[in-house]
Length: 196
Image (tube, rainbow, N blue to C red; front, side, top):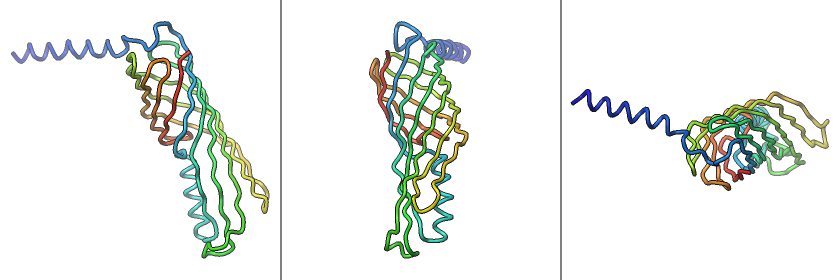
């Protein structure tokens, strides 16, 4: 009886792994996707901001107001499990500079803009008609620029890396998406996309 149960479980397991990619989201492959999304600040900017805020907080005269990450993405789905992607992201925050440590009188504010462009690869591990689960890796460049008028404006280009640990798309030709990221993209991201 144990051998029969084990054989049935093994056969079901093989069948499930084969069926995970059986039903493609679109009948014809390859196809393209365009996505718009909004999310929390990125992990990289969060860490940079944390260290800057700690350093500025020690002086007691500055703090920051972050307003999230916005982006547009494109993907070319070659087959049911692999896509080449590209994304353009914008992230920003206001820096508040006060006259003293009490932070009662605002001296001035300036905006820091962060632009990121990253090509990448997405690997789909569950591709059903209405639900798709995936992970991805992206590699690119980030351009940071602040508009501090009282001091010399600061700008720099840095290396950008992002790993999507978990992503889900729900829908058919028009779909919603949610992702958990670590790196230069929003930590938590929600969006909408379209297949064409």
